[in-house]
Image (cartoon, rainbow, N blue to C red; front, side):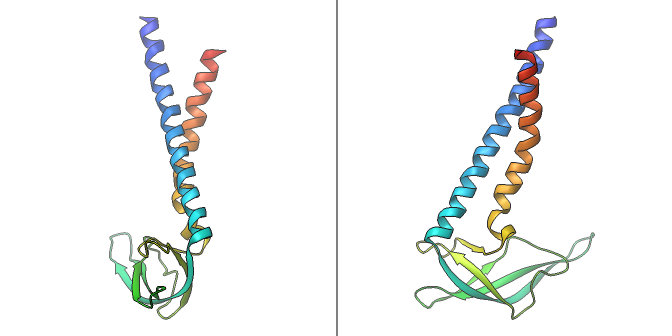
Length: 142
């Protein structure tokens, strides 16, 4: 019975460690994609054309819609995946963005959170899983 219980905990904490490792790897991949976009992407200035209001019982949040011209002088729009309250931008405000020269749909605002939010969120989730799972595994293997 004690071996079965020990195996259950080993599988659980080993799973934590494995999941943390996968998430950390995904965070690193997202970081690399951002770095490649910064190296090879096209930087331009976008204008906030609209603020979408997202109504919620906790309060309203605002999602900016950016308008920019790509290399072919085609006007494109980009809806930010980030909503905030109060709004982060004002209508008519100019914002630096970067987009992939091969895929103008791959757009990011040039700000810390705009560039690295996915990497940071994945790393934040991975960290406690790695610490908890790794600590248990190190403790049992000593």
